[in-house]
Image (cartoon, rainbow, N blue to C red; front, top):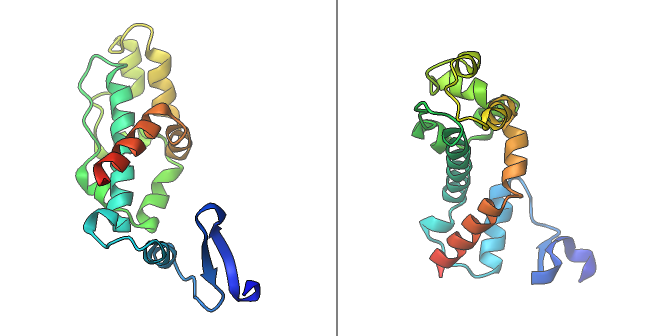
Length: 162
C-alpha cells in the first residue's frame, strides 16, 4: 500500500494522494481533499469563493489600519480588484507597495509626502501610516496571516459554516 501513495496531504486527518493521480493544479488537490472528506459541494466551499473572501478580508484590514492613521478619506480597493483572483493578475501586485497600489487606483487624494507635510495624519500614527504605505503587499500579507484579527476571522468563518 505504501508504494501506491504519492504523498500524504495531512497525516493528522489521514488523507493520502494516490500515486496515479495527476497533480496539475491546486484546484485538483483541493477537489480531491473535499471528496476525501465527503464535504458536500456548495458555492461556499468553492475555491474561488474562499480566495476572494481571503483577499477581501486582507484588504479590508489594510484599509482599516490606514483609515485609523489619517484624518482624510481613503477609498477602498475596488471590487474588480478584489474579485480578480487569477495568479497572473495578482502576481504583478505582490511586490508592489500599498502606496503604489493605492496610487494605481487613485484611492489616496494626496501623495504620501503631502499628507505628512500638511499633518493629515493622526498625531502619533504617522510612522504606522508610512510603514503600511511603504510595505510590500507580500510582506503585509505575511504579517496579516499571523495576526489575531486573521485568527478571529478564520474562527468566525468556521462558526458560520456549522
